Image: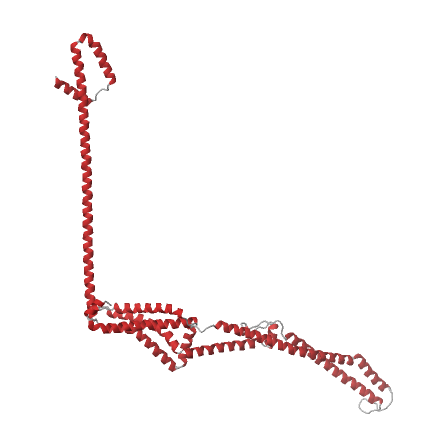
Length: 453
């Protein structure tokens, strides 16, 4: 918000101040919601969590400012409104959830505790069911049911062996008891028949004559033979020993069952406590799931949660809606005028800077061309000076050569007879010591000689 523009439309200050307050309030609510969400996620309330919450509030503040300040007229306002409302709705739902869970925290926490208690109770029931004495005996025989695969405990000793031994002894004692009872009954019957026969008792198969007759002796012998071939006394003694062992094993079985149940209960308590430790503090996702579950179970709670949710969504969308339906304000008009003017000024400034740069580069190029021409002129002048010097040196050389020739001819005229050999010798020596002139030099010399004559 530009204060210079706002001073020009002082009557709209209250409107824009209220709109800024709404944006600031939305940001503060968002920061508070984030602080609650972090505390619920970590299970600890700390002032350190205010740092990310403050960052989130600043982010939401800047986002709402962007959504509001960028809606300044134009034919695309409806499309812009839809896009901004979509963003505002999304952030409204994100901000609303932690606040709703904080409002209904008591019911949510109690529901989560009940669910955790039910889970632990179900775990304990399954462990007890799958580790009963009968299950332990069945598992000892290799029969493990699929539903108990995750609930089977390991025991160092079980009452199964003692129970099996006791069951075997009881079966043996029962069988031996039947043998002893049958043998005793048969022996008593044989002995009674012998006594009756010897006493002259009457009946079917009896003679009715007392005394030691053949039949009396025979029945007595049969009874003695039966007693000798059937160890009733030994079986009775063995039966008593079996019963004694059974009594001892029954005592051992009681102790084994008691030890087994103690060991089983200790292991079950350990598993339950381990599961309880894994539950940990109540997290954000658990609260969210519990809120949705409770909303589905209670119509009143569902209506209340949606009412609160829509309220916070409306609060977050309020700046965009107010800005849209408020139309183009005087501040917006001044802002567009100033923005257009700034664009034009900037365009002119860029054009001026461009022309200045182009002129500077053109002047720099002209200076470069001028310096190049000066260097070429200086080079040409130096070349001409050198050529003049060469020509002067050449003229000097030709003049000297011509003077030498003239002196040689003058000497020949004054004393031709006497000095000719010397002149010839001198000319020959000069020819040997000095190089012959070039074609151009010779031509110049001849020209000079003819001119002299």
